[in-house]
Image (cartoon, rainbow, N blue to C red):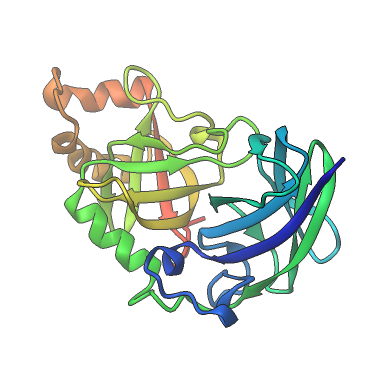
Length: 265
């Protein structure tokens, strides 16, 4: 295939948006001080040249042992011709790594590899972080009525985040799914999820935090503690306090624990 990769630039998405990225910061992403887990969103800017036409491109992240830890869906791109260089930029979310060793980013066009570059995984918080991401999430949840939930893996939300109403108690987030309430694919069966807070005005990303997930059984005393928190949060509730009995019968209560808080077993 007559397509050539002429350049790649990888950097933290927030640093790029704020104009804070320096050349020496490129080709690196942040995973936090735990040294593994979900990468902070990052930008991939890449340039191609080649015969003019329409192509399909995909990206993949490889672990140090060569395993694919993330792969993007294929997306169309158009090149203007071999005398031109065309540049494309995308923000990448949802990459989970098991170590802070260097990974590789692989670029594929038409199913063929056209290039790969090393990607440093930094075991530190991004420099824009004034506090832990969970603190930012907690503050955002106090001001909002909606949080976005992404469930990874087969049977989950297929890489998209679903808006839900919620309640909070003791630093944990509680979401009702099923029955006549909201539907989040795979959440009731998941052991982890991602909580995403967005600004009300611009819907821009405020915080993105990995969370453990577990079901709270309807006969658990915790269910009775959480229900009064959820009642005033549920808009247009027709059956009032009797909704709690309905929730016990037809819904699933899911507890989401942000990663900095030990999950209850």
